[in-house]
Image (tube, rainbow, N blue to C red; front, top):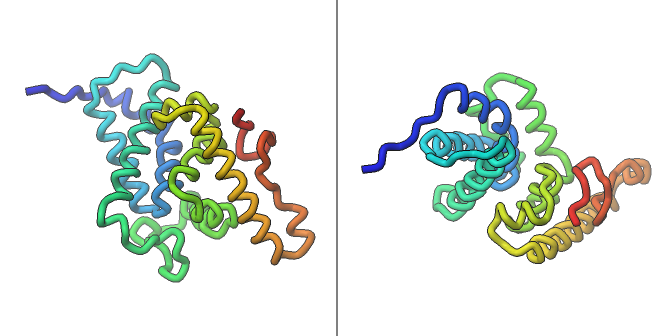
Length: 203
């Protein structure tokens, strides 16, 4: 019988402080639901706690956590209990109040995120396209790193990024068409190769 390896408190505290937000952002991007994303984060760090993996660097640790979180989110989306009402996207549902009983900085960020046009545009993307966009612009991973994280070819990553960028541009352009001209001028479109606020271009 294999005995699970237990990490030290110092190691776990560092992992959570340094990478917990990144794991939560990825889980929110994939699951679109606050409580489900928090569950995925907890499961990710439980797996870290009992994993015997040795990490060469902090970036290696972050990549490992992201890979585990991706798998957990993927499994979650395939399960029957993931088909309930999307509390983060469905404004008519009033949101998931289990974790929002008090107003905090995180609550404000999540509420603003839910109302942002980019959030809704991302929601219309298939899971695989939404994931590469997140890894490229939020995690600022290059094509080779994304390919390694997802276990796919670099050419596939580039194809998915191209398709995702085009669909985002189209969605945001359609949304902007109904807005005043001044608001349209303030909106920043994601263009291939742009040095945008979302992160460096992925080549």
